[in-house]
Length: 249
Image 1: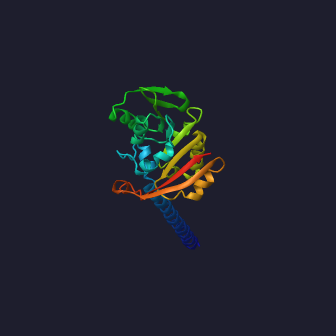
Image 2: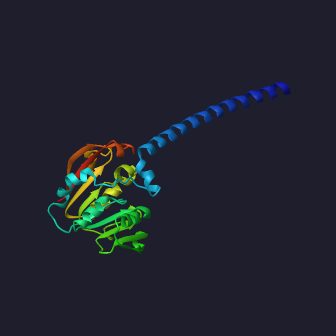
Image 3: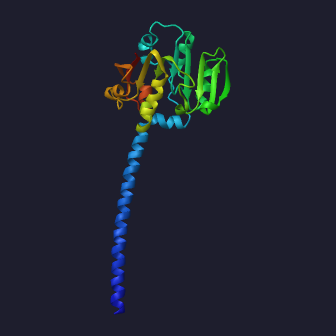
C-alpha cells in the first residue's frame, strides 16, 4: 500500500514538474520575444541611445534641407527669434546668429553646448535656471541662448513667440509614442504669429497624415522635400530625410 502510494505521489510530482517546466520554457520564450522586440527597437532608435549618453549625431556642415529651404523659414524677415529643439552643437545655430537672428536651443547634455561655444570661439556665460531645473548657456551678446535641461521642462513661460523653428532633432522619431503628442504640444505653444517651422524627420514612420492630425487649427502643413541620406548618416542607420514645412496662420 505504501509503495503504491509513494509511486503515485512520484508520478504526480513528475507531472507537475513537467507542467512547470513547460510553463517555464513558454515564459522564457515569451521573454525572449519581448527582448528581441526591444532590441530591434533600440537598434532603430539610435538617437535616443545617443541622447542618453550625452552624445548627438553632429554633422559639421549645414544640412542640405536647411540650405535649400531656409529662405522659406526666414521669409525675408530680419532679426527673427528662432528655436532649435534638442540642438546639440548644430552649425545652423551659428549661421542664424551670424545673419543677425536670435537663436534659442534646448539640449539635455552640457557637453555639446560647451563644445559649440568653444569650437566657434564665441564668448559665453552660464547661469542656473531653477524654472527648468537646469542651466542657460548664453553668448556674450545674448542672441544665442542654449538651455541645458530636459526638453519637457521647457515651455512658453520660459521663452515664447518664436518666428521660426528649425527641428532637425529627430525627436518625433526618438520619442515614445506616448511622448510624441506632448512634444508637439510644446512646439505648437512656442510658435508665434507667422512662424515657419521646418521639421526634418529621419525616417518616414511619422507620415504626412499624422503630422496633419497634430497641426490642425491655426496651422498649415506642406510635405516639402525628401532626400536619401549620404554615407555619414547611413552609418547611423538613417535612410533618408523628409521635410515638413509647418506654417502658423
